[in-house]
Image (tube, rainbow, N blue to C red; front, side, top):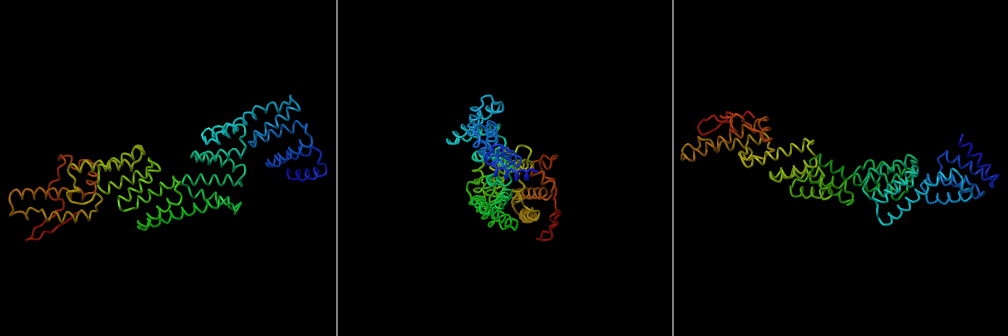
Length: 440
């Protein structure tokens, strides 16, 4: 096998260190074992023993090109052609090496100026000739990290790891890309892999501790939230966002989570604004900030913010579309007849809340209580009593309430008027006492 051949050639070279062919043969064995650095070393030894070894120089240029060391490959090309100007393999190779070297020199120049887009473009061109170069893929990955092209960073570092799964630079860069994308689990998985190969790797160790701390804090916030400990949850979420202020993709999620659990609408809105400062089109934050206006029943602002969310989400998001419809219906009703206002309850009131409010108001405005008042006062009481009954009829019936919340006509055959009669058979008068029979 190949390993046996390597052992034999090692012995032969010890016996014949001045035979360039022995080094050349071992170079080919190292290539088969994918040991590029050892292979390159053997070629260097071969041409040192025999400086006029044209094929040695040409193969050295080929290997250097493959490794992405194109500027060095140019030198090997010159050496080969100076020995034999008609060497076909070298002549065929020369344009690729020259072109690759040109792109790398240009990439160097752009990198020095911080021109990352142009540097990325030049490295991409160089990789067309050096598609097996871990060095160039890692170099491009670092530039693409600066450009925020994190998915492309994952692709580049992934190619390197396919060539060498123990490449610590690739594992570190890939973990950082996952981290910046907010995928902490994948980041830690690659960091743990790196630390398995090198437990003392300082850069990976520091990064691992940081992401572990953030992840642990966020999960603690989720636990508090599930327990209804909203204030504690908000503190944990805000604490996450403070660990690394540049961790934008995650921080906007953390601030939105704080916004979601904060009970004070102003504090909640401020947290959502922090998320939107990072990403003005972050849908989750746009939805949560709209909900703060729902909570205040500030329907004009609610409609405006739900529509902003809809612009980002498009028409395919049912939850956002429902939010827009609810807010628009509430805004319309607030200017016309609003059954929630009639009963003095919030739009998220339970059936129990509605019953309680109805009992109180019906008792207050029942016409029998106003029988001795003026005709005008009796008329007002009767109108009020009818409005209260109509409101209770609509909000006490799930189907009618849903229609009302969507802004649809609840009584289409009656021009939006009430159903007539008392929906609950709510009074049976006996002396001064009123008895209620609710069907809610």
